[in-house]
Length: 148
View 1: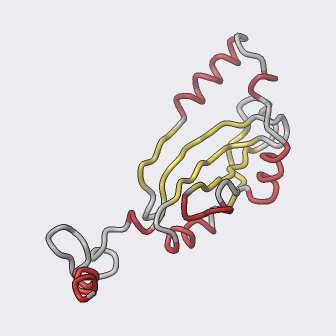
View 2: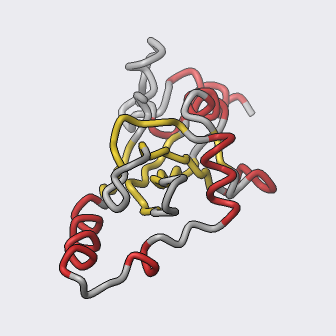
């Protein structure tokens, strides 16, 4: 997605958790604790991946995208499909996306990444051909504000 910014990758944290499980210091019941809501979100809104579950190694993982933001109001915290995210990014100023991987077989779940999406990330003038002023604001918007 072209407006994706401020990406936080949690792969190092995932490796540390898996190392703890494989060494026996943490039990699988401690890390395989997906809630029924998360599992339903994975079934109905999740995106299947080709990655095998690192715990049970039987099922492929599913990615669930949760969205949060002030403009979302009561829609905040909902799971959305990956296809819906670009549409939301063009209509909303800014919102945060959390990607969680879930195994529907053993209930493993872990936060994979988080990032920001929205129109605010677009560089005005570069993407839509508008003229910009010295501060980077579109000149047309500056003119409209001056006319008020």
